[in-house]
Length: 222
Length: 222
Image (cartoon, rainbow over all chains, first blue to last red; front, top):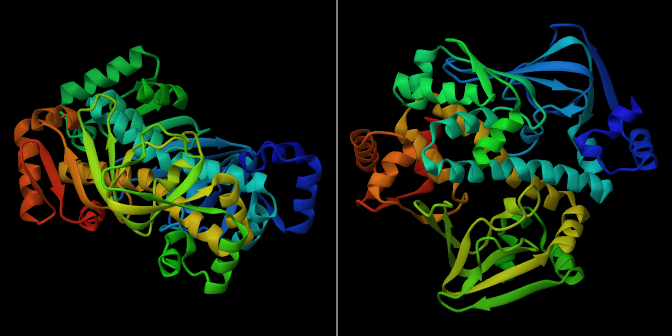
């Protein structure tokens, strides 16, 4: 468990000694969930920073009209929606359920602030995480000025998933997808086919399965 | 000057006494620029947090192919691109020039970290600022699933400008704009006309002038 914690993005570069001290000084809650149990419901307040520390969870984010749903698997060690802990919206945008038995570590907001204030490595890790996501909208939109629909699809899925997400799936009826992207059927099919041939995704009339999120980032940055 | 600093987003909620202490303990550099002088060139490394503390600057961000350029005015007190200080990209995405005589305050990265570590109000303000921008790509993309082109235009301009930006202008030939947004001429014209009638913007064949950024946010959230 200790080794898993040391691999957490927030604790990267921290010594064994420093982490022991932090664990000793602040209350960390460890919770167990069984397969399919709800860990977080979309709309729940982010009062704690929750991190998957064993097993994995499935996280699902949907549009208000429920036409589009994007699902991703987060494997330990991975924080859950760390961008929604401060800022304008401090409630979770997604529903998270256990995928098999899994363990979640929770740190209360006040303790979390004390931790990142206690050493600049913690602070640096968290600022890097937030800034990377804050830069996404600027850099993503600049990358989209080529007008390439494939990049637009890539940007959407990147925006709705975390850096280390796996088994990413976008569920949407294809006819809804035309209107979501504001394009004709043929343009969408041809973009999806090109992405399929490039090994980036596979698709059926109701879902798109992403091979690897990094391929989407490569496409966006190309 | 002191009153202006106290109104800076980073120093919001901080007492006169606390701010005096911070100013006494850390070196703050105050620089003067004359009209049209370059303050920052796109690509410059973010080694300092730069804040407009008197007058105003014009900030211009362009796509790689230079087809689209978005300009905005930042008035004192306003930090310049605070999202690009940490994270994957630590260089400025935009060029900034003085709009009339203006004053810029610079804080070195190491001092900045010490300041936000010295009191949780500073830290809180910065975390809120970053998180709000980090949430933008998720919330923006979710808002776009309606497929409304007007919302898409709003999202693009919001993504490329800061919260308190004024006099926002998007420069782009209209025929390039069709391909950027991947739509037919008529769809674009009709979206721009509706936005013009709603008082959100005005446009010519080569530029779009935004009345007020908050109207774009209202449209995106509606």
